[in-house]
Amino acid sequence: MITRRNFMKLAALCCLSGYGLCRSNWFSYVEALPAINILESNHILVVIFQRGAMDGLMAVTPYIDPMLSQLRPSLLISAVQKGNTDPNKLIDLDGRFALHPAFGELEPLFHSGRLAVVHGVGLSISNRSHFDAQDYIETGVLSQKGFPSGWLNRSAGLLPRSGALQAISLTPTLPRSLSGEIPALAMANLSDLGIKLPTNSNNLKEIALKDIRDLYAKSNNKTLRIAAQDGLAASQILASGKLNETLLRDDLPYPKSSLGSSLQQIAKIIKSNMGLRIACTESSGWDTHVGQGTTNGAFARSAKDLSQALGAFWRDITDYQSKVLVLTVTEFGRTVRENGSKGTDHGRGSCMFILGGSVKGGQVYGTLPELHAENLVDQRDLPVTTDFRSVFAEVLRGHLGIQQMQKIFPDNPPLGSIKLF
Image 1: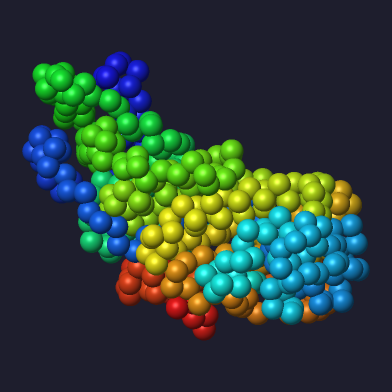
Image 2 (image 1 turned 120 degrees about the vertical axis):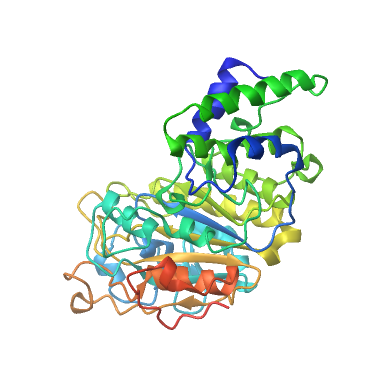
């Protein structure tokens, strides 16, 4: 039911959303809410930001490189196996690269051709600040720090409008990548928008909508007035029971973590055919300066969480796999040489995982040199041989069908030669 607490929660969530120019009169928009169409989902992009900077060399190890044992004596996992049977051994991918054992659920996806890896990817400019690097990655613009919109928001603007849940982030606040003029919603949990209206009282429903109309219509802030539109629309959709509860599965071992919960909820929206096109969430714990560990430790914990969450998500959306692509991204990699605290410091190149039904998987894309000092940036970092934006552009073209790259990446990024589709 509508309570003061729920009303204010909805108001706050609406204000966290990013919006552009008003498309229709506020009052007519709200009055039209009961007629909102629930559209069948078309191709969907899910982006997971690994905040903290993932060590790409530990995630996908060039295990035949002889320098690894010298540069990372306490971080080395030397044994290699085929198949995922021993949690203490690297998992061979192609005779050169091997997967960290904590990423074990990704191995069958790789060998079935659904998962691809891009190595040596990152910022083409030098930056080792978490805040700045994340800003560049999420805006997709390197020529201007603090660009006013994110690459996913601009991408959403080039897609046909498909409803209030077209672009969402299962995070407490809207990430920079989805911020901008195009409508997008952020919520830590679907229940945050699921305000329950009594079904036996149209009068209460009318009062609730009138209160929300009045709150925003009287505001002098145009952005605030506009911001409530899709937030309220999404709340009405969720409250109406359009999410198909019969599609939920209790037998999938999602990890009991923030990432596991958010991916499970994204799967729920996908299976309910509500017009979702772009979804975001986050994975944490990748800043491994101290005690990075090998098969146990900080890195392994985050890797296991991501692997299990992705594995459960992919099984959960079995009937929708041809429509969905998952992209992971991190702000930069780690130093090639371990530090004195048995960890790694801020570096340059890392790797991305791309999972999708139409992806040319089973390959490690990109260029990775031998790890001799003369091949490293500042004799310490994995060089960036693939601009992160070229991967973004390939995904947008091949999966979402967006061709206007100049509108997404205004500073003309190098597109490279990686072909994922």
